Length: 180
Length: 154
Image (cartoon, rainbow over all chains, first blue to last red; front, side, top):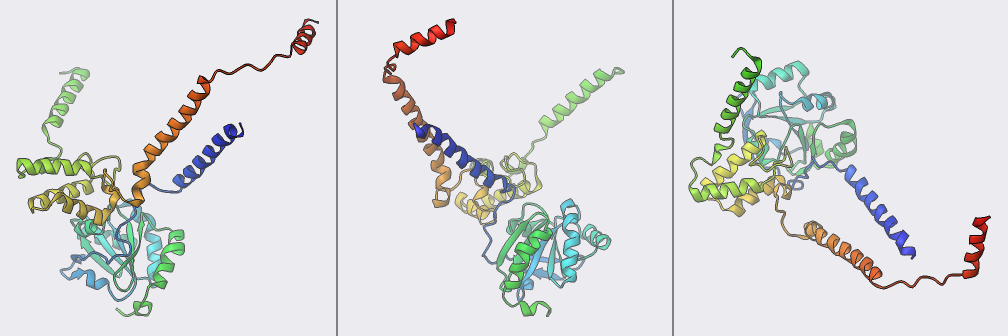
């Protein structure tokens, strides 16, 4: 007879645990299958120039690859933090996703440029290969060009301090950060 | 046509007609009948990542259009359905497949409903059994009953 009361209670506890887990889990964040794999190759060019830019240009030091666009509102949200990180010497490569060079450059002129390199992905082809499904998205790459982590949506202080910064500093070949 | 409601009616009829005429996803153009069929099957089975409860066939998100374009181009390039599936899952994971693959990490997904059904059946069966066995009422303490009745009468 005890079971009659215990069983619903146990079911309730299980449900609460499941719901608590579900609430902390954002269904919009789709885990990337690219984590731990080499970053996909691409053949793009620098915004406003004809200079080619490819995956090889990302090798040799850990860095952040940030997909953004001038039409992206959420990119404005994380922008001050990116500026601060750039000031601290973090190398960020900005990939201007589905944008025109003129709009992208004007946006950076107006708000400030946190990027060491600005790369144009007008048609979103690199975005597709990197599994980007919205901007901003930020990838943490180690010196070998392996994707260590992907952050979906604007980076905030907490994500930077808890996840991204430790990954960047433990990634190999950190000493090469300053040599370009 | 001076009356505003007439105007509105004509306008909305015109808009509806225009909407019906414009094919939403004309991207199966240039495909043979068999290819178009494969295209349809593929795009209805791939989930759009932007509006997650729509397939890329239904979604108007730019990314869905890009993926439809990819599917179309790869069909034209002679790639098989499995190759196209692999192409998408390499980038976006199993999440994009409305029909998830069968592997240890998805066992719960595939078996979960049956487990729940089994549990529900077990509970139902227990109840049914309990009902089926006639319950003998507990013996009545006639003296106590009498006392109670007398108490209430006073």
